[in-house]
Length: 78
Length: 323
Image (cartoon, rainbow over all chains, first blue to last red; front, side, top):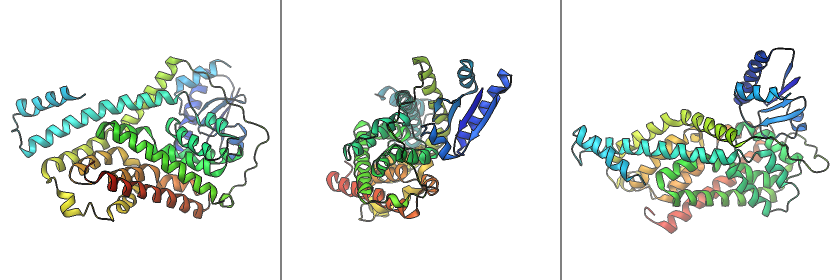
């Protein structure tokens, strides 16, 4: 699956990227993790509060720093 | 509400530690223990309540709701949304551009941008614990007024040319992003958030109350009125200026303000100070500088600062002494 982290470079956005990478390493398999920094790209997802988590083009969370468990919970449904 | 704790902490200080009643050391220590624990309990309760409520709202929803509404009434709505929407100054850019993209007029975006940090959960919780619900409600009401009028005036000034990044308005209406969560998840999220904030601010609170306790026990009651010129005309502007760089320390500064009001600082001056701390933040200005011309940020700060100034004078005038 393709996992995107939307964020303009705030502390929480970087933290979410680290959390997602940890979660992905736990589920194993091949997945693409992309950090989206460009504000214009971010706005295409209709997101106005960062960090946001997008999985396969679907916005799953906005404006919060999720925990590894929460990310695992989200990824499980895909 | 906290009578039991007043007695218990008094028993500990005066009977177990055997400090004399009316002694400066005893009074200061009693004040410190009583206040810290009281504030901690209320802080956790209020922040949890607010952040739980907030799991039902997000900025995306606010944007969907505000699009295509008429002016002024949207200024009011945007300011109200500012209370219940979680906001972090790091989100200021996507928020600003995202609102423009949805063709929400700039003045309305500013109403939200003024209200959201002003009505943050820490400020409300601290005010409630220290001054009671009346002052907390007054702070929220006046904060809303500044946000509504400030945003409205900025909107009327036609400053759109000072936005540095061109935003193409999207076609059609926005749909809400649906993110499912159940009750347990919301409670857990709110609890994690509360714990997170508590860890960040508890030392500041203790430090603030500690210095407050010292002032409480050792500084005479009319200190400010007598020595610091607390009631002269320049007290309010001074409070507003001093508040600007103190954003991150709101939790530590507020216990000090409480003590200062009991030593003769006027309530209007205190309210202005608190509003300045929360509404005018330098980090937010630095972030907004990436997309807004300095002139627009200066006008934004100027109008909000002026509004806060008026609030302070008005209250000193109406309430007179310690309110």
